[in-house]
Length: 211
Image (cartoon, rainbow, N blue to C red):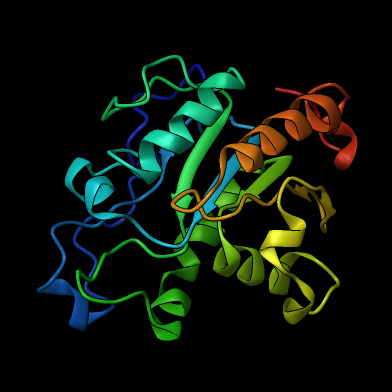
């Protein structure tokens, strides 16, 4: 963790009263910005906050998807708290989403993803990760547009799960939707991370000085 970091929750002080999407201002409970280590070399990107994450104000927390993701990254040594923690104790990982507000009745629209893009781009720029983990099909395709040379429609999250994709400046290690992930897929992701990412000097994916 960066020695100058004061807190994990929204460490960059992004707008918590954002009104860029008026249709979300009423239905949402709160704006959920990124959470984690600002010096992280691993960035985890989902589509948007779940109901549990919105209630906690922290991405990838709460029953279901949140606890599963926390458990996976705890197994890999990035999370030092229990999976049900609402404010996880993390190291070398930052959790965020394409969108920051949740509509209780539908998935984010393309316009909402585009409107939130500056928040994500700012986090990526300030964190400067080595590895990005897109969680689900939509984050994988959105990141592919910006950071790989492949067409977005050439990606299939089921096929790309637990693989490494070369990006421009870092690597992508996709994860399939945790809500439907099988135990076999969990094992495959953890093993790929241990054997193909954490076991080598992943810092060589781009030229930068270590922190």
